[in-house]
Amino acid sequence: MDSRRPLLLSIDFEDWHQLVHRRLGRADWDRRHPDFPRHVHAVLGLLDELGARATFFLLGMTVANYPELVAEVVARGHEPACHGYAHVRVHAQTIDAFSADVARSIEAIEGTTGRRPSAYRAPAFSINRRTPWAYDVLAELGLTIDSSQYDSPRVPDRLGAIPAAPYRLRTQGGRELWEYPVATWGPLPIGGGGYWRLLPGAAIRRGLHEFGVLYFHPYEFAAEPLRADVPPRATVRQRVLAESRSAWRNTGRGRLVPQLREVARTYRLVSYDQVRDDIARHYGTRSRALSQEGGLV
Ligand SMILES: [Zn+2]
Image (cartoon, rainbow, N blue to C red; front, side):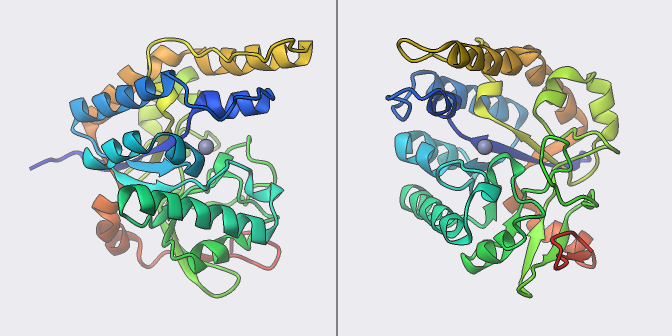
């Protein structure tokens, strides 16, 4: 019997070049990029090596560009979930625009995989105090799990007082969703991203706990450094943006894979759908509601 404790593994399936090239204003930002299949195969290979499964939060516009990769992700045993369509922050959208974006993404995912996603993650964890209505939209669209809460200083106007373990979330409209928050350790957001590239591995492992959520992106698993291509006749501002985006993502990037291998010695890395019944049993009595001010009570 496997004595390792379960840890929830999630991958935000989005094409780094597509997002950065859009930000840089390249006319061809939306075309397929040859690096993305390599990034996805790097993560799939590592998950096979570790005997791990993950929940893949699929970005709709990336699904549209790479349907064959999405089919492969699901064929290899991973769970398809929803990351919205165009990667626009929730607090930059109206309710109707947000609802249309998520619905369009669900449709793309269902059309490509034949499976309707049950879990959602907002771009850049962007459900905040200004957008408590987002949870009602998600529930209306048939989603049953949200995994957008991350108590990180990089999230503006964030909810605060986010529980460390999964819990039932009552929406302002009286609906219910499960929330699987991304792992934190005290004030440190240790669920993924820069913290995995910068903090000592021992500190991260000490802070992890059963049913915590880890999140990564395919581009973090490939060996070669990332490089954004500036548009022809780029301005100084565009060059600086391209350089800084690449430099931030490349710092410490070789450290993620060995750290995840180390974590997998003591934790069983699982997808949400593998353990949702266990979570309901363990945490079914824990609940929070969204107040009229948008905070958790
Ligand atoms: Zn994202």
